[in-house]
Length: 306
Image: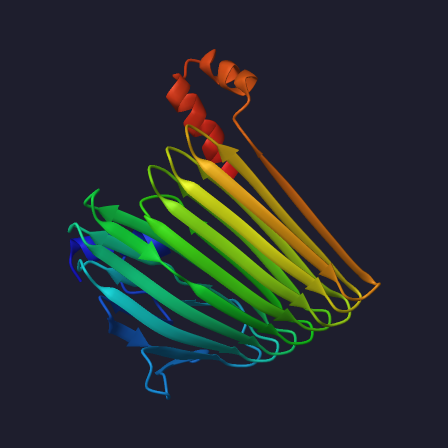
């Protein structure tokens, strides 16, 4: 890997070199480094598709798996299918994410389809970061699909971050949540210029006492466009909460479309949405401390997205 590769890996996965334990590093459509540890095994897919199968053994505690993707070639469309099989009672952090450096005027695109199968009582923190850089006239696009199947008592915490340089994103998350299982989502999103970002969630709360908590924080600048669509279905005694908060600047646009479907009379489903500009008194207060208007605005945005 060269200097550019290492810089991208640091930005999307906090890596400063080859990680310890189990990992798979993918570059420009190919796996360039892979290793399996005692707690997790990473294998090529058995169906011939591009991608990997990740098996985390039952009972594993406090382990991490890194599976970052980088694209440095212009005009490339990378499609990958990754399946995760998390053993009963296991607890693991999976650090993914994709960084695109496109110096051409063409399109570079990554389509990642990730499917999570969590066995009873298992817990996963999945960290996904998207980042783009390069020629301002080039395109850097992501269309991630995340499918989630949670068995009894399982928990998936999905942390998704996109804070710059991505021309177009269309993110779809589909989940089925079983008895006493939990889906927790924290999304952070920043768009600028003519960038476009779509986030779609379809979550079925199937089991008794199942839970979903989806929180999105976004900032839209320039002429960018964002769309947040949620479809929350409660089919048992369950609790579902969706919250979408956005800050709108310049000539940008944010569209929030909620849908909640209480199939069971014992389902409790809540949706909250708020979009607005930065309060003037907040800017004034920070500017009295010596910040410029731009510095004050950036400080407020940073605090909002954290």
